Image 1 (cartoon, chains in turn orange, cyan):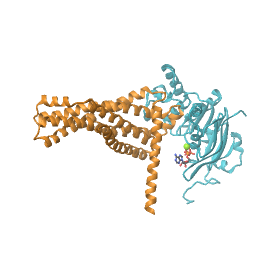
Image 2: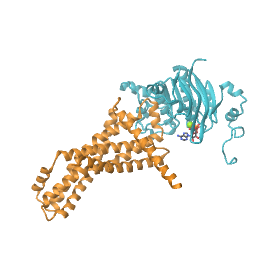
Image 3: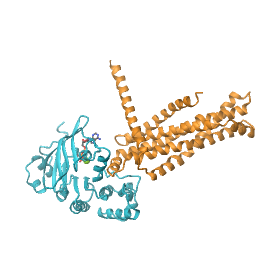
Image 4: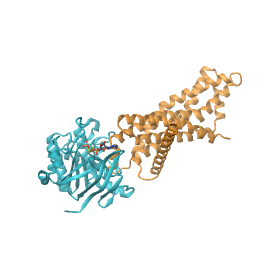
Length: 257
Length: 254
Ligand SMILES: Nc1ncnc2c1ncn2[C@@H]1O[C@H](COP(=O)(O)OP(=O)(O)OP(=O)(O)O)[C@@H](O)[C@H]1O
Ligand SMILES: [Mg+2]
């Protein structure tokens, strides 16, 4: 009996959290499409999320592309290694590695920062103060973060695509002694807009997840420093898990045929 | 007396098992300065937040200028909030902005008007112009409180809530702030609701004084009546004695 009570409690808590997140999402999205728009806050977030995330995204995609080149060479070395390695690097980076790596990195960098900043504002009553100054915190704090993340992550992924392919290329040329021209050639012929756009579409979804969960956990944080700390952790962990799950679902949707 | 500006009727608020406001009733008249006294933790700040709609009471009704504040949303909520300026107990300044941006937050005027407003308000709370470019983390506690006060009055709201405006200030600066509150009420015609533990300050700023105890307003009257009352709770509170009907949960009791 005790067992069922405990399981029931967990299920109920899960359902309540899901419902609360659902309501929060609806409110956030509704506020995205109603005035006023805080342009200055948007610009600040563009710099914070877009520009400052470039180094981490570049580093992670570079080495992901490089390691894929190394690993596939092992498998394909007997056959026409050059074109296969180029093809595998291309598909892996464009479809999976660049979006997932960028998503996870931004979750760690930006999701955590959002939860910490908004959480601190919550526990020091700055959000209450904002309300008394006739400013809707959803519009001022949350909408800019969500909108900018959804727009900027695809751009980051596009840059990550290029850098990841470069990583594979450099390994191919200097480590595996491929011919530079024919490697580039087979990369070019296998390049499809579909692979690029699906990767960017995934990135937009991941951007939404990261910003939404960062804001949600920050906005609902309780207590003091400890509450903000756990909000930060929860934001990163939940965003990372959701990114990986939704990545699988999106891959099934996009590449079923 | 003039018309009722804010009216609390049977307001109940509990956090879990802890009852904070228990059938609380209070009428605040237009243009008066009401001071609320009460022990630490008796629910004074919670009461202000209930009126603002930051906390929703379980029961009761709160009317601000005839508008129901409990469960209000949309345009009613905006209307009520616009009328009220609030100084939070912990100042609650935006730490990502400098003092000037804090003071004029949410106001839409042109830049020079706003800057002039910043300097005016800073002067009113006894701060110099160079404070405008500092960040809240660079200010002392008392200075933060005064910037919070400047922010609360910047939009010239009809109703002002001050949560312990003089706590953490030296006696001279306290007097400056007391005079500022009085002038807001007398000159601008605002309705002020002040929470304070400082009886001297309460005497200076209050038209009426109310005492909150165990979730209810147990006494309300003018400053003169305060000195003459034989209400044992009020007497104990203004004398600051630990002997009397108000029992605090200290070691002896448990
Ligand atoms: N968000 C909250 N969650 C749970 N309990 C709360 C919350 N806010 C306030 N309380 C409780 O309500 C009671 C009243 O708090 P409140 O802040 O109104 O006290 P106060 O009268 O302003 O005291 P002080 O003079 O020390 O500021 C306290 O016991 C506090 O523990
Ligand atoms: Mg208080």
